[in-house]
Image (cartoon, rainbow, N blue to C red):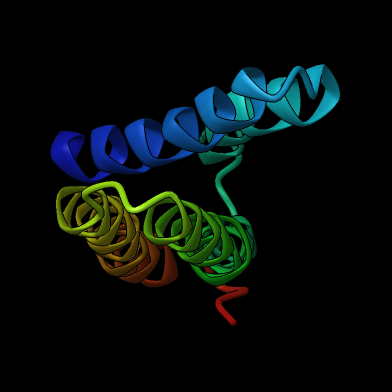
Length: 115
């Protein structure tokens, strides 16, 4: 179970670091603190964190990857390594979404209000 929690924490901290790079301190703080929601023993919180991570894969990492690759191509710079790295970050975040299912199942078993 600890590895599932660690995976989710690292995925949120990657998002936090992304926003820190662009000096968006409010979003940095929100994404850095989001894994503390795992301390709330309700299965809905897990689903909410999963949704946030899944949406961020498309909205944050997807758009960042496309913009960065387009910029590299426009400047006639190498772009394949960047695309592979961004693909790895996206797969890592999707893996965190998947790993949260185990936490959700565990909490749903022990809770009467499972969604």
